[in-house]
Image 1 (cartoon, one colour):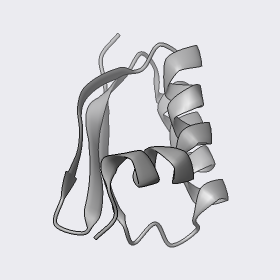
Image 2: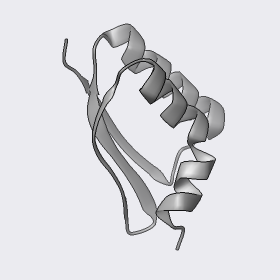
Image 3: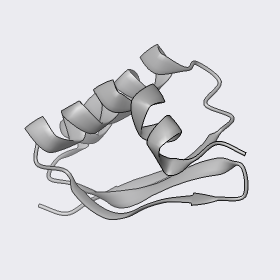
Length: 72
């Protein structure tokens, strides 16, 4: 089972976008064999940037459960 550090390494570029674009992360943890990421982006455009980066890292993202809402 992958560790949180292994997931952070895989999705490092996604976490960089999250930090740079002021996306609020409420949860970032491993559950089962998946990385769980929940939070809120300030705009739809920024949320889409996060998703575009997720797809750039892994187009299938089968090991990620991500729920990013919008909270201006």
